Image 1: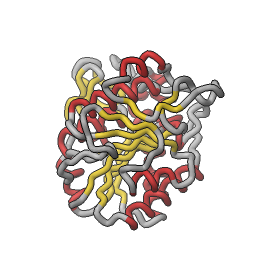
Image 2: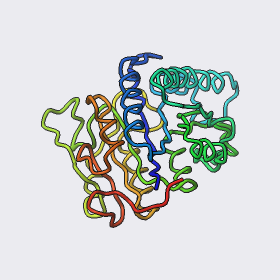
Image 3: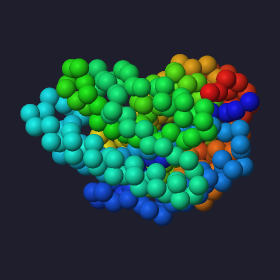
Length: 282
C-alpha cells in the first residue's frame, strides 16, 4: 500500500527572506538530493511537494499590498506571480537534476479565493500526476478573490485544501529551524524545542508563539502551527511534523521514516505511537 506525504520547503529555508530574490541554491540542491534518495529507498512513497515564495513573491506582494487586494493597478499582481514562478523554476530544475520527476502546478491558474481564504483549485491534474508516480510541485501564489479582487494564497492553504481531496498520510514542513520552540531559537539561546503539540498542550503552545522575523505576508510560525493543528484536528489520524531543512539528511530521514523523532510532531486525535495515521493514500 502506498503512502502519500505532503512536504513543504519553507520560504525562509530556500531563500534569504531579508534580501529580495535571494535564493539559497545550496539548500535547494541539498533538499532535492534528500528527496531523491528518499524516493529511491521508498518505492511505495507518493509525494506532493510545495514551497514558500520567500524573498521572491513576498517582497513584491508586500510592496503592492496584493494580499489585501482592491488594487487600482494590477501590475503588482502580475509581478508577484512572476516572482513566485522564478523561484519555482529554480526548485523544479534542482529536482530534475537529481532525477526527481517533478512537474510544476501553477496554483493561480485555477485557484479562487473568498476574502483571503482559498475556496477551490483544480485537483484532478494533481491526482493524475500522483497516480503516475510524478511529484506535483506547488507553491505560494497569487489568486483571484471574489471580495478583494485578488489575494495571496500560502502553500499551507493549498495543502489544506488538497488534504481534504487527496487524503495524505503525513504532512512535513521543512523550515529554517528544527521545529517549534518556546521562543525564537535564532534570537534566544534558552529556547527549547517542543517535541509534540496535541490537544493537551496546544493552547499553551499557541500563547508562546510569535511571528517569524523578516518579510512574510502569509504569517509566521504562529499561523503555521494554527493551520496545521486545525488540519490534523479536522482529518482523523493525519499528523504533521515541522523539521529543519538545514540539518543534513533531515528531509530524507523524515520522508523515509514516519517514526523519525525529529522536529515537532503535531497531532489532533489518537494516532498510533509513531503519529502515523492509518489512512488510504492516493
